[in-house]
Length: 117
Image (cartoon, rainbow, N blue to C red; front, side, top):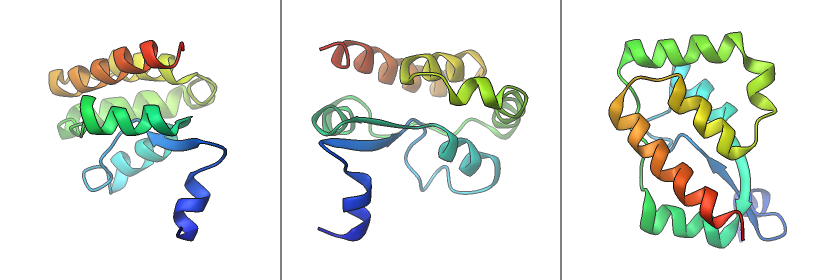
């Protein structure tokens, strides 16, 4: 197992970036947002999410991304303390891009069901 894989996996958990795939969220405001919304979730749940529910979260258009980023800067301390479901709700509520909202809602609905177990 690579060092990167060992670091990402701790006691059956993986780090999950709510804003994925990294190749789309790789510069500027998008990269900063992606790095801020990382949560540990169960390996099996993580794999199922990526394999069967959602394979990408589209990056919003520049103006919507800027609005989201500015809201994040204003509320940074409060957001960092949110659990994964509330963080997704926050992202949905602060971005008016329909494709982004739809992807985040699918992720939220899946995680809300699977993390209760």
